[in-house]
Length: 104
Image 1 (cartoon, helix red, strand yellow):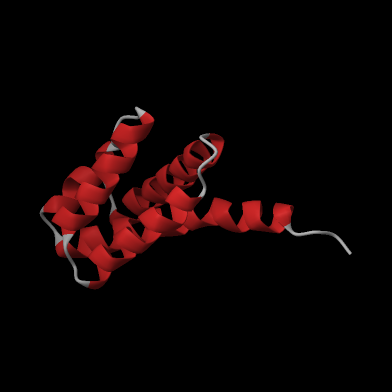
Image 2 (cartoon, rainbow, N blue to C red):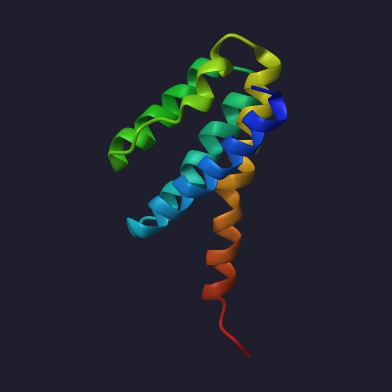
């Protein structure tokens, strides 16, 4: 599978996870998870990244997406897929916060 396709899938999975977290009525988890994932990306540590993902997916009772399998062995794939997932994860945060803003 091409890196582009993996990144697209990761972005979709991030968006789906964000919606699942929002539906569980605990949107603070999105921010907390985002910081942990961003930290793992900055230090290029796929183990730390996957650990944060495992915890979140397990707490929601959801299966871990298979797109992350290749990220464990290749740094370029890890960075691309990890960043795409972050974009998807944060996409719903922006929609939620704009919906909560009072209209003047």
